[in-house]
Length: 614
Image 1 (cartoon, rainbow, N blue to C red):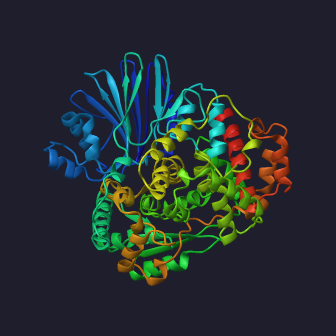
Image 2 (tube, rainbow, N blue to C red):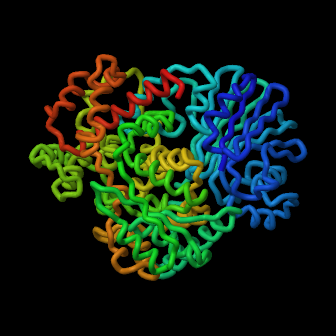
Image 3 (cartoon, one colour):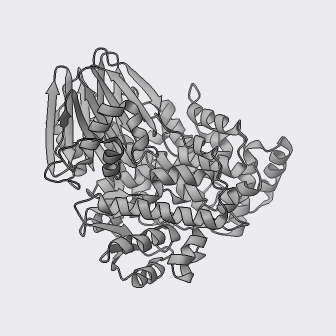
């Protein structure tokens, strides 16, 4: 795991870049320059520590690489690649020399890398299928700058705020695909590569992988055969992620089946596996369930009890790490647990991606029965009436709240349905947003339109949207920044190449059965996990956001949002924000907290990142 950066026709401020990317690669730093090109690399040494130094050169190619290629030894054998080191970086170089851009199809891993090709006088920049590893670039005529993190990039270039994208953040909760909060700054989308000319800095984007193609490849496997296949794929993925490291690899262990399966299988390859569970007050405590798994597989288990006593002092730093407004409050416990886990090791397994591939969210249940993306005007009108009748509840997990959310999404249209089903921030209050010129959510609308024109079921449409939106735009961003802030590498077996090619084609009934989520994985869990875990609902980090907004973070949120110079006032009606602070808006406590936290995160970003250089 590393931090990378580079530029064409632009002198990098190396001391500043070193400061900004240090946490991504504290073990070694190096810079390469040739002609009008600079490449900069920060290394977190994990594999082939002695010989894996970067930039790495071979013939007319030079590479800097962030990530891991877990099957790189298999790729070497498959294509007869002759390598001098044990480094997966060299495997990429030799594969590109022999296969060109098609080498990407062979890689099982997480990656963002830059290859300088002297013969073509160009850069080849590629990103992994799901978007585990980030890469951002600044491009104006005649200049090009690229970096692993937004803060590192922004501190090199002068770029103004893209206000249309700020509205996208408020409507959706994130920045989709190439969008960032800055003008002329873009994110390379997952499953894409770019060719950049050193002559004129022109950027050409190409999509090399799309999950939709694998939803179209429907499997005929019966449930038993599918369970066995998923089991086999998980074994391969976990074994690779354990073996592709010269350092010890541990596992995050919650009380859910995803991390439980990962831990159970990992313990078969590592008899002294270290596992970590987080627990904190004000939420559902999964530690007792995690302890059952740890005891069953005799792992070296550590329970990390997190106190949020210092949250008001830490919150600005946690949010500023993202370099963009970041609304997902589970970034807070993710930051703390990563910080604590780093005290024990450098590489850790997690269950990311399982829910999006196997149907783990409660919102998937109604979509398995009805395609809300193709619903009638009559249903929408009826749902609007029902929503007005249902009383507001302040209990997030209550059936009444679930019914209200269902009526709300059924009353929406287009992307409004998706926002209501997922992030649900300002849904029902969009009139309070100050409109901008242009269509701020066009890319999301285009994605949904493309998926909606297909013959896929409602469940498949929602799961494809999640894989292409929520997962890369929010969830993977959260874990990358949270772990790398502490120089910790997170590895996700469920996002392996083979799993991404197999799981999408499974029948809906293997994912949602009746009201049961993750049906296939629950059946597999019977083989590995204590019975108490098998039928547990998905919880994730049950963050006590309502409590934080009303207690621990109340003073700082009011200080930011009740100020006359609140940046959020440029995008949301000022009186609405003040009434929200004063509890004069008819809305549940949970949604009030979510709206306030989203606006607070926007203000923190503006002050700490956009205006000042953190």
